[in-house]
Image 1 (cartoon, rainbow, N blue to C red):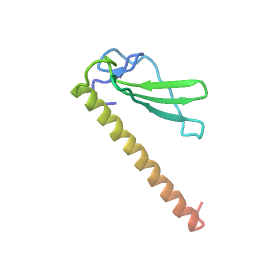
Image 2 (cartoon, rainbow, N blue to C red):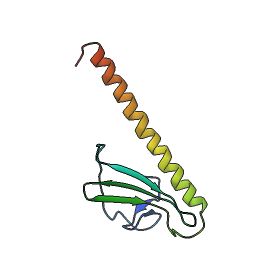
Image 3 (cartoon, rainbow, N blue to C red):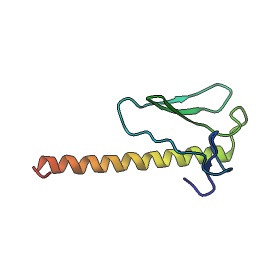
Image 4 (cartoon, one colour):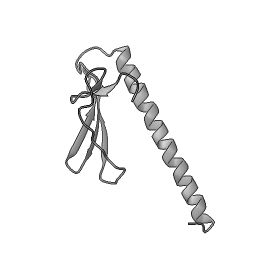
Length: 102
């Protein structure tokens, strides 16, 4: 999480301390959605087995700010790192399997 960002129980922002932690593992029953609206900020949602996590910016109906864009950029950047790490591990595991190594 970038310096100064924290969960505040209502979303993510530069206020409050850690309100709680929710974990979702990579599974086939995890759904990821991006809800978009004509006149308000989007909501990124992750859902699985009774857990629903939504990510949006403060002031949901307000104007998009530079801070909103910075947060979304960091979220996208970290998601790309997550994907790259999984791809690397997958490739390594597949290569080991191809050579008979376990």
